[in-house]
Length: 265
Ligand SMILES: Nc1ncnc2c1ncn2[C@@H]1O[C@H](COP(=O)(O)OP(=O)(O)OP(=O)(O)O)[C@@H](O)[C@H]1O
Ligand SMILES: [Mg+2]
Image (cartoon, rainbow, N blue to C red; front, side, top):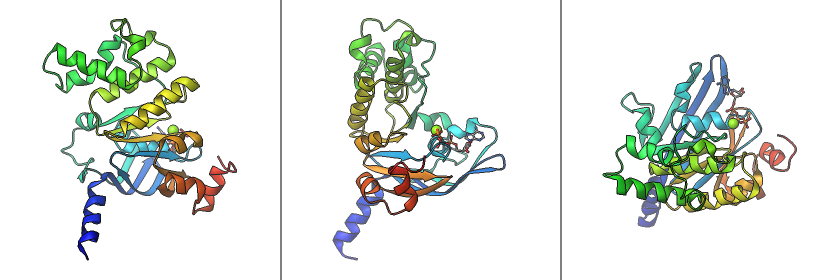
């Protein structure tokens, strides 16, 4: 191999943040995900698309072991974060979820103040040495989530008193506050109006300069707008994965073609 090839290989391997191989997920007897192989690149937005029930949320939850909380759920195969198996017995799922954060479809602020919602993670993970540093993290995270101007004068008020769209941006601020390496977002804009959606999309684009984002979306326009890589799931299989442009303009698999042209889904 020539020097250039060696270099390219080294670069492409270090760029991989999460690698999944032969992942199977079962809920009891039901085989919900079959043989999923995928590499999530660092500093990239990856979109998961596909018809309802195809396994997008199931796979997303594998990436930070959120499926551990579902009794009937069993995950097989290998998922590595920076080359280390996240299902290894020595991995603490709480620590893992600080590195691989998650934003859910339905905003779920804690019954705490706006400030405490954002400060929660940094406090339990000891990210601030004093109140000034904590204030800085809270402000930076709220700014990052395009919410600061709306809440800066009411930080002590309950997070649950915000509008739905504001609550979702608060949840994003909470996830960003622990400085995750990967942020998983499961249909984060489905409760948002077009303005808040566009703010969250802008935010996603900014976030990728710092870490990887994986977003599940039913909106193909959104996938095309925000992601560089797209994975198409169908009936528990990862059918096609590639550059977003290619998936939307030159899909290889007829199932992908049917879905993006609106014939299935
Ligand atoms: N907690 C659960 N218990 C049993 N089966 C489940 C559970 N969660 C998901 N499933 C099943 O696993 C399959 C994949 O579901 P999943 O929620 O991952 O789909 P999805 O692609 O996210 O769908 P949607 O677009 O509707 O959110 C479905 O057949 C679903 O019924
Ligand atoms: Mg889902």
